[in-house]
Length: 257
Length: 360
Image 1 (cartoon, rainbow over the protein chains, first blue to last red):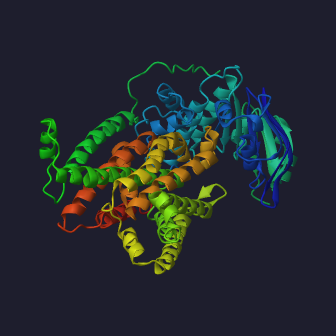
Image 2 (cartoon, rainbow over the protein chains, first blue to last red; image 1 turned 45 degrees about the vertical axis):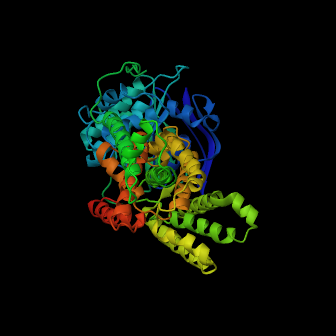
């Protein structure tokens, strides 16, 4: 079972942002979309979630997402947004419920489980707006987990799509979130994440999609994608990839240009 | 998959942060309060008619005195019902609009929607006078209601188009565009009023101030069904508005048909505000004060907020109407003045409280 984009093109206004991107992610793995700012990572993500209309086909578990209703899609994949602003003073419990109640299902039993999963077990009565940025991010993750908690009738995998899930977290909570994602993938779920931190990516992702200028530069395992040549080309600066015994791959920047 | 099999049937103890129970209790309390206030309001007034005497007459199987019948059934009852409908319509319009714009400062009066509805109503009154007499009599207050609805709807639509770019609604643009739209509508209304004759002018004056004094059965029967439809439909928007609080993209991701929710919310606001304005003129601030108080009391969950707004909006307007009937008795203060004197400072208070929090 997979999430796949076949030759998708996206235009925003007059500018084409994605020029025929084909990429795929498998359930049971963490697939990371990496690349420099403006390379089209987020646009690719928004196409894969169905948020952005695009030319070409995106299929989820073998079905074209353009042919799925919003409810069907919402049961099969949940999306963690980059920015997590909320306009009214909801409590944490109320935020976590929103994703389930949007389709009219009861949420009581899932709220404590989802909050425990993101290491915020005692936060359900707190006001969301009074939390720190990192805590808000984890509450959003709990909401997203709760949305796809229920198994599907066809037993197919459910997907987490995370847009820069660790960008506002301290290193301990970056690990919490990535381990959670790894656990989700390990249990058979699919995870697609837009990532900036190449080292964290190398540590957790089984597949990387390296974007550059609205195209896929290369995709494959961390060893295949994280090479001096590919990274230096994509990011336009000298980067050195080292294999550190017992810890996998590390990307080191150079101080000199 | 993930060792998290759901157990949705079992009802556990309430979760911390789940405010649906207090919200439900508040709804019950507000419903009782509304019933009480409505009864008091029915007995409230300058004439010597007393509700207790009328009730004891009825209990004793006697006919109502002619004067009591006129005062209670033809003057006060339609006025009380009108107050309830208009208060509910304005408060729910405010709550829906705030949910749609994701901002607690949106209000049909502030962003020019009431002005648009007024323009529609004024056009109907003045140009309706030019219609053949039979046709005008046939449409009567329905024409005014429909025109007010159309004016409110077009204004809301324009406002939303102007304030929203690439799915993001700018609050600053919304408020500024609302001021501009309101000014344009008021100017156009002024132009139309210049053409009005004396009788039409008398009909028109109450729009500037807002009043329930003109309430009668024909007006009520023309406007109440529209308001009732909007009020009954509004709770169906609740889940969508809750999800919209996460942002439009996230609302779409949880399975909400965002465009549909938005256009239906706009229609609901236009219908409720339009009908309310058609029969009562510009009564301001109910739409901003009522939902705000309720969010403080039991949270922003729209499943309760919309219902409770309708109830508290009715209560608030009946109380304001009683004040307007007594403060300078035997004359009557337009109710719009009462709500503005109470609501204006409240609006400023919200602004001050949220300074630095609201992203303007």
